[in-house]
Image (cartoon, rainbow, N blue to C red; front, side):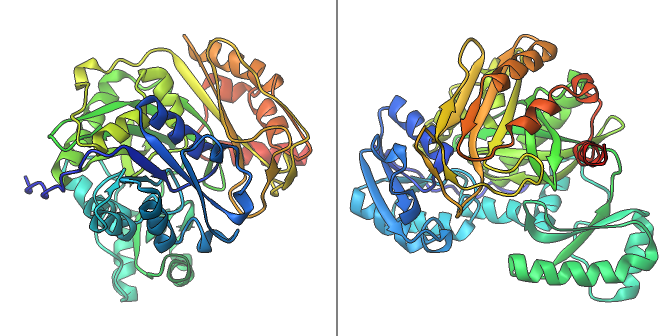
Length: 461
């Protein structure tokens, strides 16, 4: 087993700067307050009226509306942390949350990055090195080499034949559904390589590619992990995130339906072992494709996930609080045997977008009604009168439900969606309502391609 990298010893802190915006800024702020910590909220010019600014202990504008000049401006964020006296920075998700250089800069500034150490982010951020690390830890991976594709066309052809068509070409530094291209047959291979290399170079700053077997009818399954600096780690159950449009998740659920405990248990433990081998700290998510009873690792997200609430609802673990406590240097207060997942949970991402074209919809929310009741949770930053900006991601709320069974959770989500009203802007709520009436989805008979096919049929009708 490789030696565990030496970990920096985080010092206790009493103030956290939240280097993010929107609903996740609200979520992190709430977790900090419950832990007795002060918070520093930051904003761009476009977010000056953000409601979470008034509930933070400090609220600083760090730049113009453009994310590149504000939420992605590392120097501005570090300066804000120093000015406000923050001892730690929580990156949330997106923006700089998986930027190893940012994590390193924070630690070098004498602050705590609420996330993994920079070396872990670097290892898992590169899909090739991540695959190599997972194979070494015994985590099952998609068939294909754990090395970057060479430049030699003949060697590339040989690798593709050894894997077997169809194959998929991926950018080593990719993510978010970009930098991927499916190749169904050999005569399309070299064109696909050239196009994907150029896309990878422009989007991720590196033309490095790798090749894997393309699975035709898989589900997207995730395993949530949390690790401390004291050699403790646990996995908190599993999620199904197969409902995707253009590789972007729309609905998530926990647990993944129809997967027996004896099948998922060794995979979860392999994920824990992988974390221990690379000296991982904090929360993380292992993403797999699942087909014909087999799991295939595709990547690890070294941050808090948008869909973490479904795991919180089923496991009873406050993942954000646990993440912060680990960063403070505390040992995990739960062992693997303490993790028991109960019931079923769904999350719907409510976006400010047209429900038919999915084009973003900016503007002022003139009316807002949110559901409430047992087993219903809404994570949001918007209110009546809130101005939805065109500058950022269209996510405006997450609607989460929990019930004893999957069928009951689906029924609860239908009622919750029926009671959700947002006026003044377009949202995808009508689309979500229709999806939760779909028979195949209700039966759990869907893979990662199902939603795209369902949308095509709806448009053709």
